[in-house]
Length: 285
Picture 1 (tube, rainbow, N blue to C red):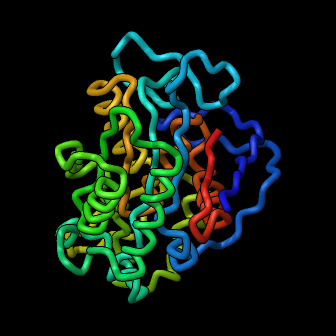
Picture 2: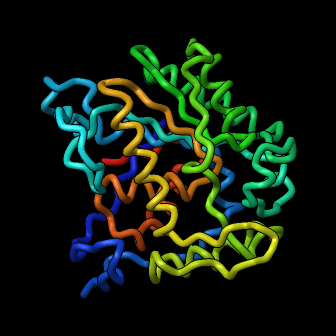
Picture 3: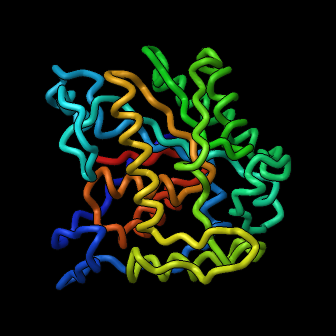
C-alpha cells in the first residue's frame, strides 16, 4: 500500500548557499542517527511527480504549476517547472549487499557497482509502480546516472514501461553518488556520522582521502543537482522525466532545493524516506 508523508513545515529564515545557514530560533523536530543500511531497505523508493505541471487546468492538484515560457538561469527553488519529474533511487548494489560504502567515481561502471539480485527485484517493483501511476503514458525520458546500478535500473524501467532505449539519456557526472571521502570502504552503518554533520551545516565535508574519492558536502551536491535541473528544464517542455540516482543524497538534496527547504533539513527528508520503506511512496508537496 502506498503511503503519503508530508514534511514538517517549520518556518526557517531565508538562506543563500554562499552564506552560512541560519539557525532557527525554535525547532520542532529532533534528528536521530540514520544509517545507510536502514536506507537501503527501501531502495528504489519513488518520489512521486512533484512541482510539475502536467495539467494546467487542474487547480486542485498540489503538483500543478504553470509552465514557464522563459528559459533563463535556473534557480532553486524554482518559481515554476516546465516538466513532470519522478525521482527514483536505484536498487541495492553488489557493494551495498556486502555492507560496504563505495562512492569512488572510478568504479561507478564496474560490475560490482551493478544491481544485486535483491536490487533487481526492488527495481522491477518500482518500474511496475511507475507503470501503475501512468508515468510514461506521454512523452517520457529516463535520465540515469552512468553508475552501473542506476543505468541497469533505467533499462528495467524502460522495458516495463514501454520506453524506447533512445529515450534513456545517461548522465555522466551530475548524478554521481555523493563522494564520501575517508568513509570509502567502511561499513554502511558509519554513515550516521555524515548525516549528523549534515544536520549542523550543509558546508561540512567528510574527511578527505587520497584514493581519488571526492569528499562532498551537501552544498556540493546541491550545485550538481541544480546544474542537472537547469539542463532538463532547458532541454524539455511539458514532458515526463524520470531521474534515476545511485544514492539517496542526490534525491533528498534535490527535493530540498526544489521545495525551498533549508539544506540542513535534508536529513529530515532522509528520515521520511526511511519511513517510506518497503516500496511505499514519498510524496513531496
